[in-house]
Amino acid sequence: MSADCLFCRIIAGEIPSTKVHETETVYAFRDISPQAKVHVLVVPKAHHEDAAALAGHPELLADVVAAGAEVAGIEGVAESGYRFVFNTGDDACRTVFHAHMHVLGGEQLAGFGR
Image 1 (cartoon, helix red, strand yellow):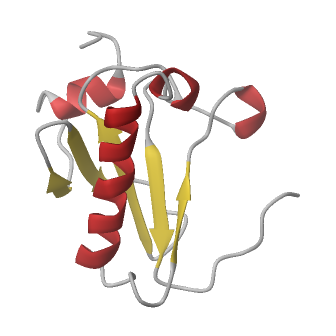
Image 2 (cartoon, rainbow, N blue to C red):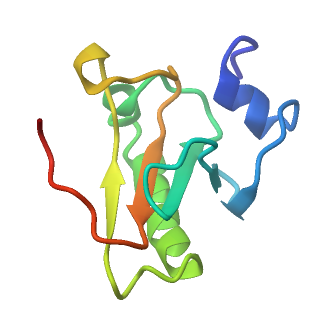
Image 3 (cartoon, rainbow, N blue to C red):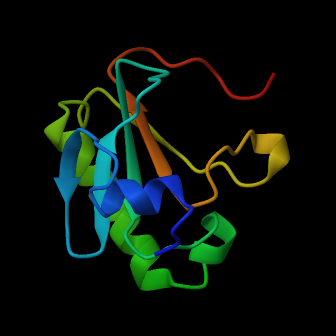
């Protein structure tokens, strides 16, 4: 845990969140500024700065993706479709330096890019 990390503090219960799903290694909660009808963040409980760092831990990365699929089912978007997004680096507008995957769905999503 990183004491100054927002997501580490959420996982520790120091900052409130709306839990959607939890496993031994992953915590999923609603985004406080949703960009779609369904917008859930899937966060590894172990602190890793971004998706590139998480790639060095393939089992944990698989846990994050599996939890994302579970969230899609919980949220009722598994059949209609959903999107997984990792933001890594400044050009991707990353704002929290703890690896996390966005699960987006529940409506027709816009395309990627500009």
